[in-house]
Length: 293
Figure 1 (cartoon, helix red, strand yellow):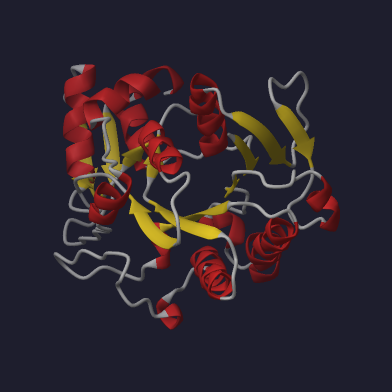
Figure 2: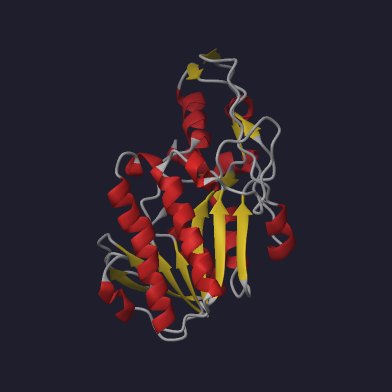
């Protein structure tokens, strides 16, 4: 099997390459950073470049499209730059996939395409999304590319899989989620300040995300699938689990105890279609990130 991975030097991209190496899958990596002595075929090029088509082989098994301005702060107030990269870059890769007869296009989207969650509300892939409710340029760019891909598939484009990633954590030095940020404070401080202990997300470990991506290879037809953790983990849960892990009992200052912001995207479809489920518990995940905190 041969895969083209855009954003191959990203957090998710590197983990895909690690897991693919174990499976003997051939990789062609694309990113915009300098890289020497690569163990796989690597090309430094922007996804908006017209000549990127020359890098993609004919009949490649899949393009896994990760490359994007992938953090909300990178897009806030920068709609043009955000859409140029995330939307026009994706359209450029769709053009390439058509020209090179790519068999499958896997698109990394985000749970942020869902607007706010009401209390005790879960949202699956069939939930009707109102784009006018999205206040994030990043989320809107991802949703726009989802719509473009659906339209292209209806007009004869290849097998298309949209994966809406949950909030990812794992062993890395920067771009931390709340999991790494709170665990680091528990490890290194005696007091922690938070907004609300009730806020929660379905955090998911990087290795589980990538297992889901690889499980989606060879999926026929058009699918939109959430890849999120099994349970809602609140800030309070993170603190308690981290305290237990580090054998500490620290002072917690809660600035807004009345707030409750829960995001709860269902992962049931992934379990049914991909035969996938998260394997890494929060306790196990903390072991993998400890040396980076």
